[in-house]
Image (tube, rainbow, N blue to C red; front, side, top):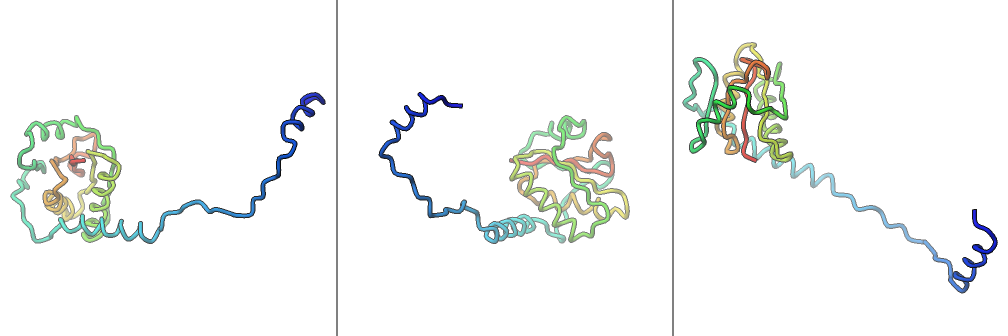
Length: 167
């Protein structure tokens, strides 16, 4: 609470000032949601471009699923197998169709790129082994995938794949 002396000092200081009129409203800038959605859709389509169903890579389908991009250090596979990399994103594809799984896989890679995440886990499950066989075939086609390996037990074991991405 101000005493009389302070009030008098304040009135002397503001004597002759004119009050401001606020008669304009300036709305906050908002990004165009439609443009952002179109850009995200285009990025998903660009990522899907790499996932061909006809491509048959030379993957050893006996034993653990593994892949190492040409030019990468072979020690990366050992690190993935041992669980030295902790996945920061998890994608569960249980019960999805191939087309839906392909879309989700594209979204995962896009999210990893956006969030600067280099290791993710993809739960393929057992089921009919359709996704378990197809997911690595799609992943090896993507230029951002450096390596993949069947996950260690703590990250899903035979029902999961760890991927290492270039960010």
